[in-house]
Length: 358
Ligand SMILES: Cc1ncc(COP(=O)(O)O)c(C=O)c1O
Image 1: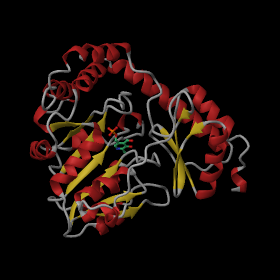
Image 2: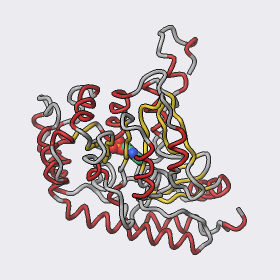
Image 3: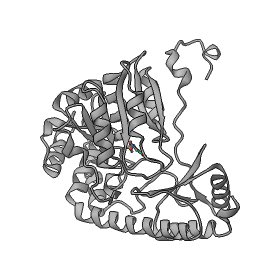
């Protein structure tokens, strides 16, 4: 993007921001395993709740989604004044970062991690300080601590980490919190929390009282299967929550999305069954690819990470031939866990690849 090609002057920070690229493929034409979506269709009760809002869309939604916040407070056993919602957790994170950082500041993050982070940081004008994951694709507590300077305004943590699937252990988390100054915000991004069945799984919502500088963010996009509606939520100190309300544009979560999210919470038992099915599919997929010789790290999310450029090229080419969309990155490829027939199609697609030859 070149400023000299257009007369309107924009902020110099935009020069260095890449445009977010979504996972390719429309369901129906290809098997979409590129966006970590929930393969189950929305629950009928959720569809009814969305339809039920149709005749009142001439009215604005509840400004701060108070009924949804009340329901989340009840569901998670946290005070409502600690909860914020946003137009997807991506927007919530953007507004959070706008509250703490600007030009000249730094935001520390593990890398590779969620590809939106550098973009969201770039929008604030702050500099993204990327700390490499360990060779086991885990957050590096020492490296993150070393990267924190007087300019640091936030540290981003992602568990399980996108795109590697690796969870952050409680021990590593505590070490990071001990090394980050108490006036620096720490975001624990738990977008894939529900798929994390690791023993001693971190629970950010239970930790915010202990750490006033911590905020934990989750989403209705993954386990709840509502990514098309865009609802994210976070738990923090009431002060941080108030700051996010200030930076969030009015009426961020639309009325259909609010109604659908409340209804999805009312059917948490079905969501749990779906999550259990996805976890079982994931574990079977991991076992199958490892048996074939692929070296994939432990994943506690709804996706698998195949590290390495050669593995990426071979898998992307095979999937293209079989009309399966996966997510390629410079250093590997991420494959979402889909419906059982999608997962089998993926295994069939990569059947001819010899990992030893890569
Ligand atoms: C780690 C992580 N955080 C946040 C998000 C954003 O989710 P949403 O904006 O749909 O709530 C994603 C989406 O893929 C993600 O992978």
